[in-house]
Image (tube, rainbow, N blue to C red):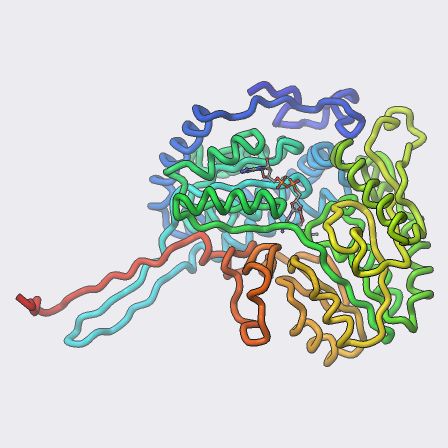
Length: 498
Ligand SMILES: NC(=O)c1ccc[n+]([C@@H]2O[C@H](COP(=O)([O-])OP(=O)(O)OC[C@H]3O[C@@H](n4cnc5c(N)ncnc54)[C@H](O)[C@@H]3O)[C@@H](O)[C@H]2O)c1
Ligand SMILES: C[N+](C)(C)CCCC=O
């Protein structure tokens, strides 16, 4: 593996190396082939043998130490993440915070993993043990590189598993920092192993016979391929996929909060966020006022060098993605949407940034449910505003999508808020806020965003447990990284049927 950027970043990168978003290379990695993937899995297997023997408390102690190191190195890791992805340094720091918090949370749970004791006739008894799965694979997307690696590895390791992780080839760097930190914290070498590469490397991992589980974050088409590969080996999968989430703003909301919420729901990480509430349904009475304020605040977003403290929006991930997002804006105009602001390329004054993949955040008015910009995941800074009259109408329209990752509602009427979220077909619902992510709460989707296939959600099964493809964060994730063993103990003699 050739690395042009030091994985132990010490803040002394020269300027030329930094501007990845200006078409400059920051790192070169060789893609891992079969040989490297086998080696990584073998190493992880060896580490697993040691790790699974440790008590939960011992594992928790190492995770806590890793969390402490991440917290101590927040600024350094955030700087590399900002360079890695292009997101503002402010946001990168928040990502690092939710990463060490996740490790702390599962460190706390590691010691509490326990089974049951069940009394049987004649003094016999049974008990259950919650055991690790083995070597798990994590495959990440490029929008939250360090956070994704942390959110996947923390519960996996807490449960006694090892993990081989493959970051996106667009953001290969910060997962390596996490690997370094786990080792420094006392994890056996190879317990969290990083391989680099794209789809081919990912497939090798999914097909590997010694891999017990695959946890994937990325698009629906790739998720489908991963499920197919995993199905051949009867491996469980966790799928965290895309979305086209609704944000519903009722006329009785606190308008100031609703406007802030709409920006949080659309423009974090250049709009490249899976759970973004990009279909903003606004009740007719406040449509004009809401739209005016959203546009005003969107125009104030400071775009530019993400490493500068004042910047709030950096460049998109790469040129093809920028062109794709701009293409959605063009298509929206052709279909009758009105560009209320942004939606065009942005060239910062700083000449060093002139080749960057920047665009102005865009608000689209006059949108209809049948427009492509309203139906498809854009994964860029483009908000579509739609108007509605009644609660029943907006619920039907909000749920009319194959995705089901997140949803939000702004209203002062809390009875209505709870009534509405109970009907929303989404795995994560926000009331009077959006895109906050406390690690104590499970994160994951319904429908094509990560759970049951479309069509299966019915009035009868709505509300039933649908975390079939797993969740990230929260206590429930322990169940997705462990398996239950039943032990039946006979205290008398064998009563043979023969
Ligand atoms: N639900 C969530 O938590 C969440 C979080 C972030 C991103 N996303 C989604 O991710 C998508 C954007 O990310 P992306 O462009 O990196 O997604 P992607 O599906 O193109 O790639 C994701 C990862 O899968 C790997 N990959 C590609 N083909 C593969 C294959 N055949 N087998 C195994 N691995 C393969 C890629 O190299 C990358 O590491 C969006 O749809 C977004 O909504 C979801
Ligand atoms: C931290 N957020 C904003 C909730 C994003 C989680 C990961 C989605 O892409």
